Length: 325
Image (cartoon, rainbow, N blue to C red; front, side, top):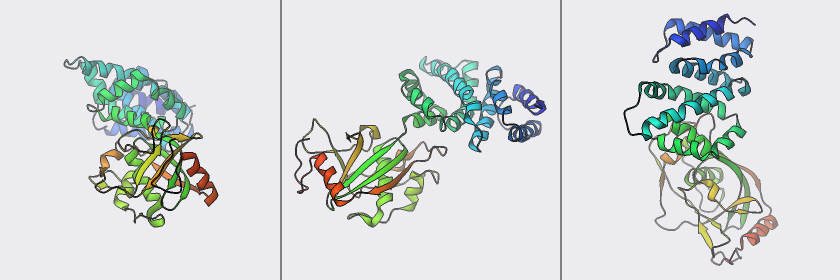
């Protein structure tokens, strides 16, 4: 393997002090990209050097490795090293803010480079579901991300990724007694899910409307989020074993809070109440273009299948009456 491109890039990374790269660095970067395209294993060799580089150089190299993954490179070559570096930097930055003292020079340097490293972490973790699941269950890591998200976008991006969920969903429309199997991907909260459910059904269900493309494109991470509001076309409810009747789903809460029946999350749609709360596009952010949010309709239930599901929820033919779950 010809190491010249990697050797030149590492030398440039060791002298890089942050900010815009100069022509020498850019030339080394382009040569490295070309070499990695011809010899993919060079990305793994570059990843092994991340821990030996000063923070600015490590972050810019990690970002380049993320670009390679986004263009189809193997995440296994660089993902573990990038995520290891992120987890090494995060507590050092966190200690700086939690101590309520002025950041040390080292912490300041890490913070300034953290955004580039975080972009790479998102690019890699989007293709590493097992690592995401492990990280999401790490209470210390999640607490650090939560406490830092207002200070650095890098913490907010990774926290959003780890909070995102993908799952199967059963939607029952009470007035028409119809049922549908849906699948949602990369969604954190109920409001985001409601917007994309409405986009799926549009005018095909009673009470539906023509979706607002401006809002839906932001919800799907097709366009950058701007200020805007959405409103409920239906009331979003579910059933819970310890509650009598239908229970409204909190739009601000995690989609994980939606109740399950036979292992599948279930939402019941009914006409909205007057004065129902709107939600703004901040519920679609931070946007992760490496993991765009989506909801797709997988199957429309037959009439008998829908009634079976209504029976499982305890909803009678009279939509105003619900048996105790």
